[in-house]
Image 1 (cartoon, rainbow, N blue to C red):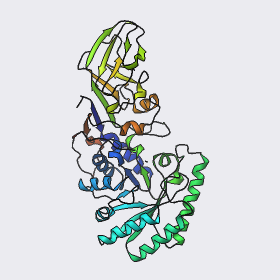
Image 2 (cartoon, rainbow, N blue to C red):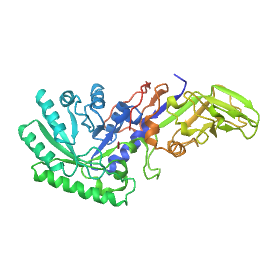
Image 3 (cartoon, helix red, strand yellow):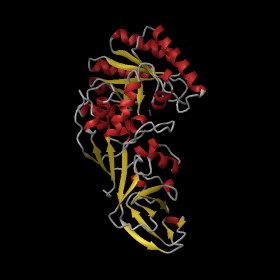
Image 4 (tube, helix red, strand yellow):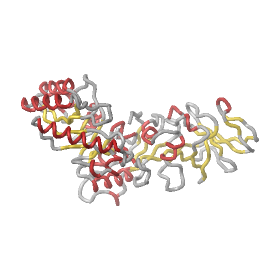
Length: 393
């Protein structure tokens, strides 16, 4: 451990969940990649207590971890290789997205092996050209699904897709994708399927394209405070702090770090924080990003190292052991995750999910005034030191 602390505020998660729950016909909370680095089980329980009715993950393994943690809500896993453990998933009542006949047959075989019916969501490509079935392959997939439904090995619960340009609500690709989705739905019904759930909207479309909400929306990024339109309608839940490890006064012209990429313009004070790219600080933060110390923003100077960064604190009376805020919600003037994404030429999703295992995790429970009146459980404060994963909705 390096003394850095990541605090996860579940009250912010609850607030975001209520916003989506109030405006959507059905709300799936996406908790893949360990809940975008926030802790999948804690986020799942919080979201379910504040408006979500379902959970979404990427792989079967993530779904089974939630089941092992005692979560019984419906879970959809939408991206698996052909050799995934579908038998265990079906036995654990995990719903599965399928995008091709071969994968559907594997799921059907797995269901037969455990004497269960697999609930599946057929995944149609509507312009993203990634994981969905192409328009050419879609009719065949629907026919095969109808056959397997009659055999009792699968039940088609939903039809799903994903929008490529939802971050720009006026983009013509959105109109085209929704038309393709409507056609895919008609093709499925013509083949005898009657799915109860249609879903194509992730966070951006849920917020800004009402016509894309259909029966269910999948909210990942927004649950964690990411507003694709940058309108600040949501609350970030993460605060990253680190202790000052060393302090030194240096004269004008002093060069800092590997390659001497920065030299101080005047006499100043430099402080070292025990965080680096091994902990998720992007190298591109060098000489551009800022942290907050003693109420003042201070720039990162010199190269980002594996384990440390240097900040220029000017004339601040900073001492070893003082706390620096790397980023937070912004309510106290500290840098936000959005600002860090801009400084590092990346997206908030990446920053959230790349934070390393040497950082201590502390989860702050939902404040009593924000808890639902009639349901939902108490979420205890815990320390977490798990690693991260990747980041879709």
